[in-house]
Length: 194
Image (cartoon, rainbow, N blue to C red; front, side, top):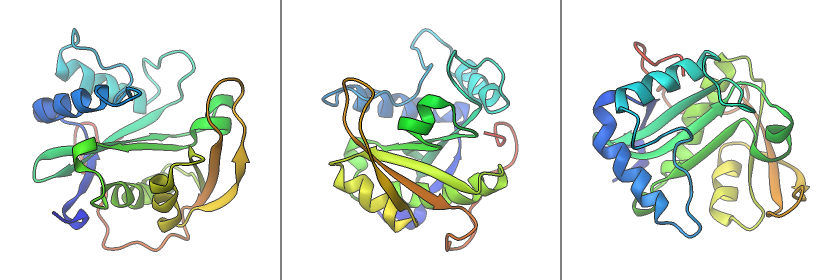
């Protein structure tokens, strides 16, 4: 499968089974990685989708969160990854998390999906008024480093953690300067504001 078939779009209620498989795969990672903040087995999936839609508008944000857009990378109807686009930076995001965080389902890695998801997110950043997007990765994560650099990331430097943790490579992407392929914006309709 080629990354060219990937579509970055808002999560939909009909993505439930594929989304749950992605959550399970990430939970099996060492260390476990949280695929979606706020997702709980006890929450009805359509309610979770509505929760994400609200968070994009700044409604119902957990403490310490900023408005954010949650998008999924979909190939042939299957969720292969997710991308969180934070509309602004708080202190934590400015130091560690950045504007964009992404992850590809472990069984779907090394197919170019992360690069394509990040590439498609850049015009979304620009539409939100983010002229320079901060993207970070662990210092020794060669795969993420290549993804960010392939999407125009310019290394600002490497930061030390504020306590336990790993050093982070800090990149800036000028959203208006990134060369893109054919436009592939998130679809309109319910949840498109994320």
